[in-house]
Length: 253
Image 1 (cartoon, rainbow, N blue to C red):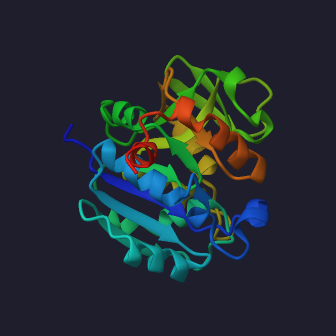
Image 2 (image 1 turned 135 degrees about the vertical axis):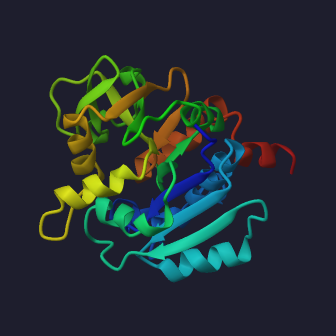
């Protein structure tokens, strides 16, 4: 399989749960260690080999565009896609970009940070026709907010169920997906009243045995979508994200 160099980032939501930190700013621009979440994600992805980014924006899209205008990434191509229905579930945001992604791509959330080595390992996985591979974490005991995490049930490498309210599960969803464009077909198929979540589409793929799990092992990641999660992530960042481009930049300042 050719190297995957494209990435879709979902950054359209209004981030109501971190309003105490963001004010009226969009969540992707809330700073973590002085750098917006979205900068963490783009730089870590770029370090993993991604060259082309498609970023779906919605709430305060103007502010996100302005930030990128002021902070160009000279070694990356960045295209913005507007989702006017950003208050709907995140599957709608993914579908907004379907015409721009014809090859396998990395799918990321704007509020999940990760180590470049973890993304690099996921990108190296062989992806069969019509498949999606989700990075999963079996280290359940190290998760900061387990109630908020999306749970995953597996049979071998096959993911057979994925949702937040699973009672019996094996691992957790890291928010990092290696996708074939077939994801868009599944999302269209499960839409109801013009709405669908990523998990809806993933469950459909799971029913077809087309959703696979990739064990991220000791790779670290963090869902950063509440003030408490921000504080926790800053407290463990130097320990768990020592190879972060942001941290490397701070060391050399």
